[in-house]
Length: 224
Length: 224
Image (cartoon, rainbow over all chains, first blue to last red; front, side, top):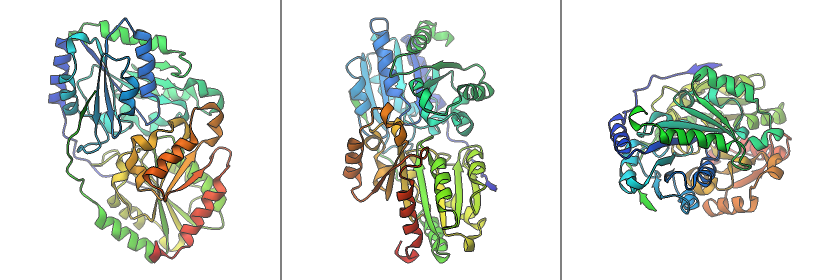
């Protein structure tokens, strides 16, 4: 077996705009969470479950990143305080949201009326790890059918996350997924990450996740 | 709901190198198949099942694309005629294989002894659609747990594929996946695509897929 590796020029950082986004969010005491995963891991389902549980407790704004289509934005529209759709199909980076896409999205939102912004990134385990958006916390969803080796194969996105969600726990009886092995991989890469086991289908585990979100939204923005 | 779209500069094509790769393959009468999917859809499992079924009938070379790790290459190593691992972690495009990565990989393989090369692309539904590698056929795997809306959300990769595999059919009883709706989406995007329903776990449907591969390997390279 031969290995071929090439050294990369570091991608142009979008730190400056991300910093500007975060200042704006802090001024409005809004917590922003960047939700990342493979396609079909359950980002939209998690957002729907979260909005249902936090109804009346937090005003939630949603930024939906998708290569194409507005199907996710349509699904979340009825419960959110505001929804902005970003389609990356014809952008220079179509495989991730970038801080420069979030900036105009924030301009479209009634920031005075929002406590929490959930950003659904583009379905991808690679590109989103390279771009901070101005968020306060980064969350990765990994679902059981994807297999327990994802942290080993896509380490970067797990290294930088404050929380990792193991979704589709309801499918555990039908799959060969080793939860302990997955948790060990996460601990090796990122020992401080919170880990949530849940099922967006049955609702099991959502409450603990929502408590964590409430904590994020309640913390002093200058401390975030 | 607001939509934000930005016009893209078309990504630099890597057509020239891809053309060179294909000429080299044709000279050696090798069929090359580019296998693309989300992380965890079953690319490696499909390759393992395929090698097991085609043992003694075709000599198969494998090119494994991964951001990091060699776990997939290790899994396929024992049955393949040759395996080359490409790690894209520090490359300018870490989210897809590119023709320029395939070219040196082909130099490492005993091309005279190979009939078929299966290229396992990086797990991603976005970037790989943008780079031809010199392959003769493009195959996308979509697995049931990802949901039936993937062609709508990631259309480009399905538009250009000669075949679409619906994997993890064994999970159908436990999921809300509408096979007819999925097939309709594919027909709308790409009416000529072959569709294979299969399960790498149970082996159901693998035989038909292998027949298709045998056909590709047997066809005259100049016609490909």
